[in-house]
Image (tube, rainbow, N blue to C red; front, top):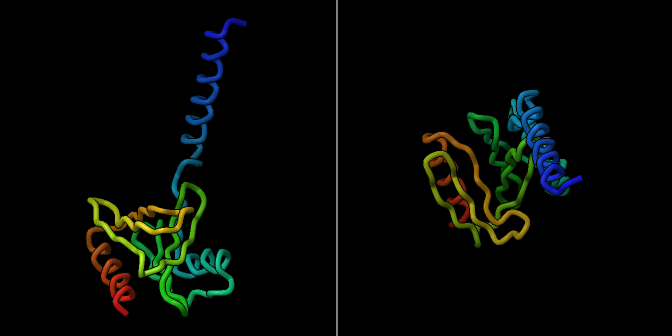
Length: 134
């Protein structure tokens, strides 16, 4: 089989799979319905640091978690959910039009983009910065 035909079949197949996943709803970001859901995701990742409280974003795609040592975040990564502890000593926070961007020294999540409303971003930032100063 000529390389041009094989390349076309591979590209077409991958594109077809992507379109199929999108139209069947599998490309939609995971949404946490309640703070309890967010705490459950946190506790699955960090069972030795149980969540005491969770502040869920309006979109349900992010949650700010308070645990006994400080704060952490849970956020949607497609259909999956990730959780990371936040080290306030090395945290850099930046606001964008739709996100609060956390830059960390964690090589597994050096930049965390949290989808937040304009009203939520200052509250989350103040909470994280209060922990930074405390």
